[in-house]
View 1 (cartoon, rainbow, N blue to C red):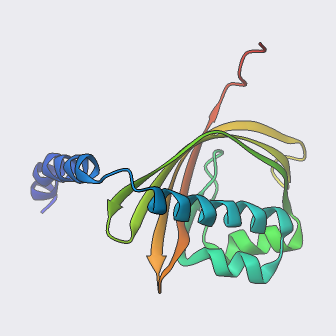
View 2: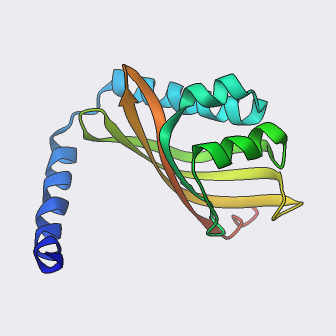
Length: 155
């Protein structure tokens, strides 16, 4: 079974690449995803439980740049209680790609400031790969995976 999956992996990669190449740059799609992500950021900065619940998928998989993992319940608890609090989300690059009907990927670079139990003084630059899924007609945030980047050189 494992060897069959490994043999199919290159074909899956080609399929996704072909799907991406065939998908036109749809301004309405880009605007909808940008609005959903802007609402996600606003909800995170607010710490409002109702806003947070509305934007995150029940199947949330959130892997922080330090390797810590959260599901929806644990991540929202951190944001609502203030044990993780962000004061700045500043994108330097952000793009969205349709992967399949109802599934979109976001690639981004971002500066984040805040505090958490693990980092009392959080001031980091990240490279991010995230997924949004359309659920009942609304784009909801499904997954996050980030890696720390060195701070950009001063200009």
